[in-house]
Length: 126
Image (tube, rainbow, N blue to C red; front, side, top):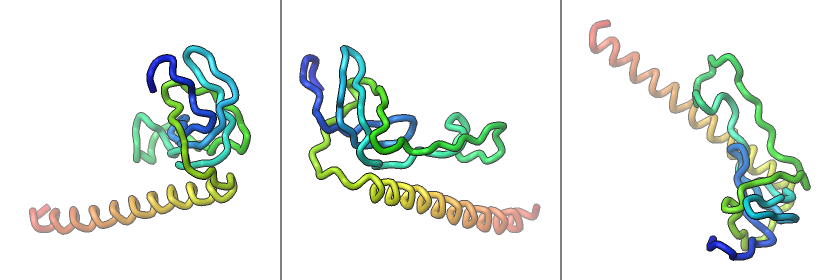
C-alpha cells in the first residue's frame, strides 16, 4: 500500500496468528480499527516461542476474535479484500476445521517419523 493511499473499507488482517476479514471503522496515521466480519485462519495454540512443544510451562489457548469485535492493527497490515465476505459462523467453523486438520496431519506425521526413527535405532544397533 502506497503512502497516502486510502485504506480499503473491507480488509484482510492478521492478528495474533489468526487471519480475518473486517470492516475498517476508524484509522489514524499508524493503525486501523477493524470490526471483524469473518475468520480466514484460526489462531495457533501453544507457546509461539516454542512451537510444537507440548511441555512448555504455559500452553496458550487462543480463541478466534468474535463477530463484530473491534481490534487495532498496524495500518500497513490491512490488505484490501475483494471477495464475498462469508458468514461469520460458517467461516469460524471452516477455519477451526482446517486447523484441526493441520493438527491431525502433524500428529500422523510425528507418528510416522517415530516409526522410522525406531527402525533406524534398531538398524544402528541401539
